[in-house]
Image (cartoon, rainbow over all chains, first blue to last red; front, side):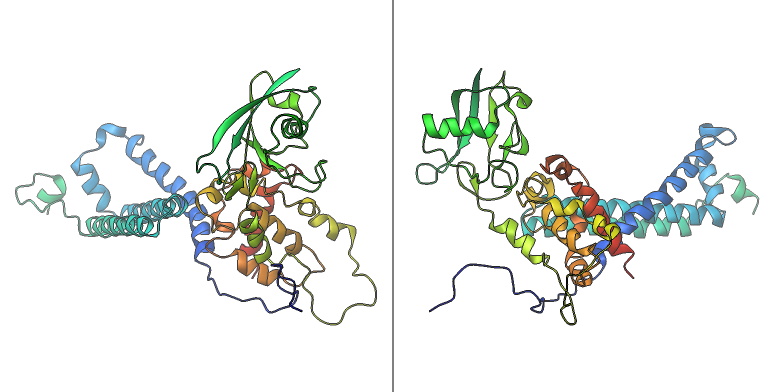
Amino acid sequence: MSAPSITSIPKPRSPYKARKTGNFELNSWLFMRGSGLLLVVLVFGHLFVNLMVGKGVHAIDFAFVAGKWANPFWQVWDLAMLWLAELHGMNGLRTIINDYATKDTTRFVLKTLLYFSALIVLVLGTLVIFTFDPCLDPASTLEVCTNR
Amino acid sequence: MDVTIKILRYNPEVSEDATWESYQVTAEPTDRVLDALHKVKWDLDGSLTFRRSCAHGVCGSDAMRINGKNRLACKTLIKDVNPSKPITVEPIKGLPVLKDLVVDMEPFFDAYRSVMPFLVTTGNEPTRERLQSQADRDRFDDTTKCILCAACTTSCPVYWTDGQYFGPQAIVGAHRFIFDSRDEGTDQRLEILNDKEGVWRCRTTFNCTEACPRGIEVTKAIQEVKRALIFRR
């Protein structure tokens, strides 16, 4: 007599096929919360300093940016803002692609484009923050350049 | 009163397409949608197919999409679904429809099975029952109410687009044992739900909590599993 052919739950206490999944999704979930909180501080701090302190929005020009990036504090601030915002946005789009792209190929193409664009923004942005030279133009009349 | 029931009919032996069909029935405002469906099946069109067993909100057989929301037909009163307009009845979304309002529940039960919904213990069996304090029992009381009707899982937009996601119900089923002080399989269950298709797919849209005919706080249960994963070490 054959056993009844009912698909049933595995016998209790039968060893579960343990698959080590890693904590990537857990960490990415935590990162979204942490980076979100930090970005609130960084972005509003950035807006406050740029738009409200001193002459406010009217002070913003090439020299203003040059002056800010001559200070390592603002370099680190902007770097943190760049990396956190880009990774936060990238991770959000990654989950949206996971949610809505049903075909494996679509998902692969979209994610490749996403990671590629994020990489370009991160590398270029970081490069600009650290190699920015307001006096690249020898004819520059900016105060920081003429006083050298 | 006269009520129009508009049902999404599907019969793969006749047509590949599902079509809407309307039926006029006489019903009391305090009748249930299930009574109206019975009238359709018994008096108007015997080919109408739907599941129902206990008809009193306990067995979880007759979950369906009524006026766009997942409900149990046996717990939904006609007067609560605006009978002045046609009441739409569709099969629950995200599971393969077999006929009319009957869906294939196997993918749903597979997800439930994969979270090990049974007591896992080690060591010798005690000679008497496994005792538990009232507080320990209360910890997971909410998720013991689940009747496996699939209303939550098939209301979840992530489940609609991604059939790999465990779905709210499987997480509720896991929650019931994860927070049971007598159970020793917590680590295994948490590891299963830490998967790419596990709790992290949840976007907290609260559709599941709204859909649950038992009033289980499904989204809260999912969040508690997330918390348990984060603080488990």
